[in-house]
Image (cartoon, rainbow, N blue to C red):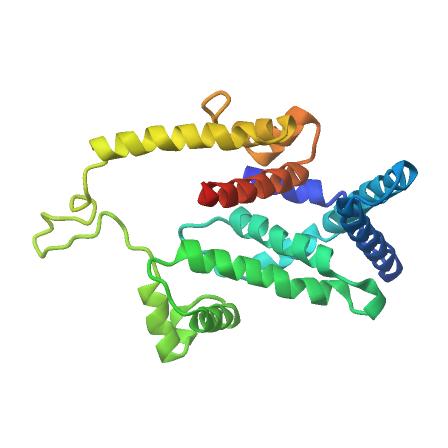
Length: 275
């Protein structure tokens, strides 16, 4: 709760954007994307490369401003979701921020759309995907999952206000306690039926292979990015640090650190699957 309060206080420092400013930032981001594509072609001369790189830097700053100004939108949308047992509000917010980042990259202010309306779709999609993947003990079709979330928001949570089929589905997707008895006399619980946590020989070999693979993937990251990933996940001092602590260690905001780490983890996952 303390970390959430700190986060809300931090994002409250950013000013909201006017429609005109949204359009200006959108055009800067679009220009930066075109500049990046041109630079990748390798056909520009030295002076043109400098100009393109300046455009890319301007676009990065514009994207940062655009995202920071709309972080409160993510919070307001995340709060409307019934909070699953296995997730915290900050989990929903951080996933929603990924949807916000995608919306900023795709938004075209020249078309006259209101950004908050456009971004809400991507933010809800990201949050919904997280809930589908992490919160439910069974996998259910995306269409039914979306309908369940919609009814839960409208019913503000109480099960008896859901439609009969959604109420049944809601029960099936809830996490049970490990203390739940599996027999009438209570001698056998769900926890006691779980397999031993002690690793077997196969697990030890797999762990060693994973460690080598991780070291290889981390070695491919830029120095600052590698430090942020290792610091965030306890690979520096054995302690997992918050995005705020990781950002402060290198002079960044928690949101900037989160985006760098999230992007790096995604890239590492793609590279790992190709090995």
